[in-house]
Image (cartoon, rainbow, N blue to C red; front, side, top):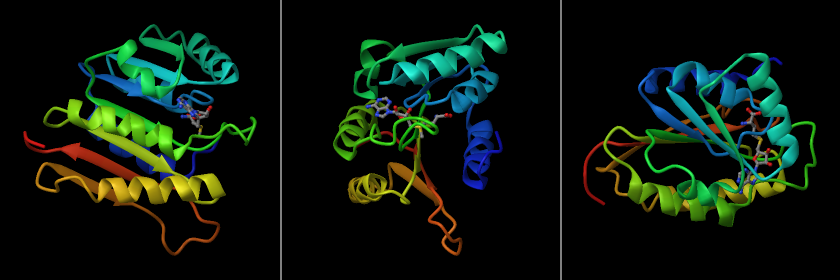
Length: 185
Ligand SMILES: C[S@@+](CC[C@H](N)C(=O)[O-])C[C@H]1O[C@@H](n2cnc3c(N)ncnc32)[C@H](O)[C@@H]1O
């Protein structure tokens, strides 16, 4: 499958952030493209989704590639800490499962709840990446809710990079990358 320009850029950023000693979390495994990419960079990937179809598609790719550094969970990302405690980064590729049920999409209240859990847990150089889709109504609501929350973070403690394509038609997704740069709030 051809990656979108934003997803290519997201992967490029991830390749600079993650090394073979790192444990990372794919909060929204979907069809497994990100999980498999992360498995090539990291020591171990813990991946979550609420849909059986996502687990099926991802497990298939994991088996095809003979990966042995991936753990898949049929669970909401709010429950990450029930499964894993130490990780360098978390990736959220938001929205609905491509080729799946478009009604089952990430929800702003759930995404925010997870961000509220993750942010206090971050250590220096840890990161959270969000790929946010504004081209569908729920995604637009989610993007506004995330922006409002990110504005509340102390910007001497967290660096927040935004990568978007403002001159492009068809409302492409954009990236928010939150990195913790000092101890504190
Ligand atoms: C855009 S897709 C992810 C794409 C995927 N990372 C890939 O590489 O194919 C978004 C996924 O988020 C999942 N999702 C929605 N709410 C979730 C939640 N609370 N916890 C975990 N996954 C969730 C959906 O089921 C869907 O599969």
